[in-house]
Image 1: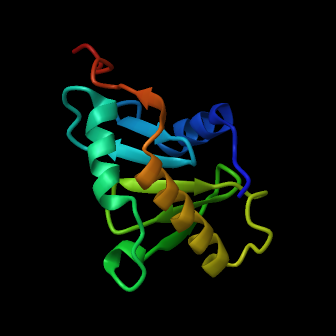
Image 2 (image 1 turned 135 degrees about the horizontal axis):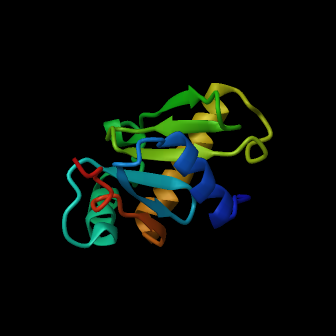
Length: 132
């Protein structure tokens, strides 16, 4: 399985999550956990969430996925059974660009991230509130 480098992934997620008030954590294989209620150590909070909602189990909701075609970034976002767990799939990763293949590829990346749990970037926006 080919990969996308951390800098490219971080840049892609910054463009995809354009809200500067969103905190998020990026994992090694492209899975991003958006933290709706960030608190404490963000990497730990995201790791706990991903360890529960990252691993794929065929035949259950943990195996479900959806594919989002992107407009401002090349590639796709693959969704799963938790709204805040998203996986980026680059245009050069799967050879077949059908939604089914992209979805399976993204699900396998999410599964790897959900079992390996290797954080590569934390975007902490808790202190970015605009002054009144």
